[in-house]
Amino acid sequence: MTHTISKFKTADGKAVAESLEKIKKDGLGTFITVMTDCESAKTAGSGPLAGVPVAVSDNISTKAVETTCASKIMKGYVPPFSGKAVDDLEQAGAVIVGKTNMAEFGIFGAPSAYGPVKNPWDKTKKGGPSGSAAAVAAGEVAAAVCSDAGGILRVSAAYCGTTAFKPTYGAVSRFGLIYYTGSLDQIGVTASTVSDVAAVMDVLSGNDSRDTTSLPSKTDFSGKIKTGKSDDSGKTCESGNNPLSGVKIGIPNEYLEGVSSDVMERFEEAVSTFEKLGAVCEKISLKTAKYAQSAHDIIAAGESSAMLAKFDGTRFGPRADADNWHEMIAKTRALFGPAVERRIILGIYLLMAGRYNDYYMKSMQIRTLIIEEFESVFKEYSLLIAPSAMTAAPDLGVACAGGCGEELSSYSSAMAGTDLAGLPVAAVPCGFAGKLPAGLQIIGGYQKDADVIATADAFEKATDFVKAPEAV
Image 1 (tube, rainbow, N blue to C red):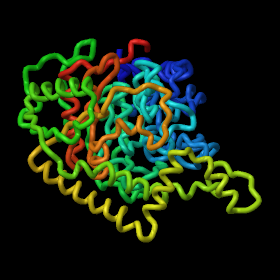
Image 2: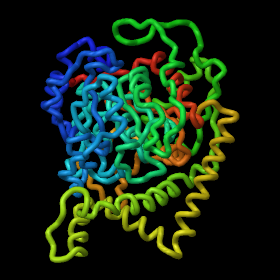
Image 3: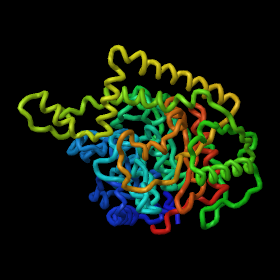
């Protein structure tokens, strides 16, 4: 049984209580903060998400609720306001039941100060760098809203078998998001099905004068989804049409490098499904792909060193006892995790006089070339597809050291490139690598969010991969 918005709605007033009970028992480490007082929250109403339990990642501000970004340096910080995403969800009737675990400050490879997220399919495996996908897969919430820098939401969705969506940069307001990299991070959504993701994105989308990166117009995420009659299992019945007829899909060879054999098998089967739906799939080459991850890491490091400088004990979080101001800042910043410290130190080095032009500015120039190549490719191809993660979920307990190789093995040039270009991406399940989910991502051109959602929906309806872990 999948845990969709409609199924939570049929539970009426019991949905929130059942959600809290599952969170209490899960043992997955999906949540940092659980809002136990929300059980008595009003669940009636006419909003599209009325009475539906949802979660937000712990770097999205929630008024009067601790927001830690999964870091010791933010422990005890209680925002005086909520982010726009939180306000939008509550206005739509959703009940926010908790703040999900995540990589520290959303930095890929930076372990959470609250421990790892376990995978609902196999608790000996990682649930990914975001607890949002695991919370959805375990049936604890109908949907979760999470930031997605470096692909932490999409990789987590691939590991846990959920659907995730990162919109075009600026489509969702980031007001209230505590991001570590201003030009790359974007708020996304994960849920069991594409239609549920679209329903939440419809709520979140829209201009916000408090966010200077906010796009001027609202995006209709659900508008292009084609409806079809479904049986009780949720699988769409054969309609005999080709919903992707005339759609040309490119498969960048560079995005397939390093993918494990079992995930590649599922991906190749998915390509066949797209072709059966009427799409034309062709292998292509992206010349700039080999530079994407390096450029992404340099830009992210440079921006993080500036963004995280404000966490020094003077305004946010705990303050270390010391004899003078300099010693206080040094001791307080020692609360950053090692991976975050390395990122900050690297960023400071890259932005130094004599290094700035060689690294940061050169990476920004590469970013422009990446954007231009995507624009050129999307003149010929409607969409691009690639695996969401290089492997199925890895084992728990692997230490993150010396570059965090175990975590970064799932970080691909596809994730980096789409972040740099601010493109919309949907990650959907595409089968199982052994007993663990595998996923693929569908990449669209700038502000082609509706086309990406419609294609993801067509693929989902043609397959039977939307399932919940048997243990749930």
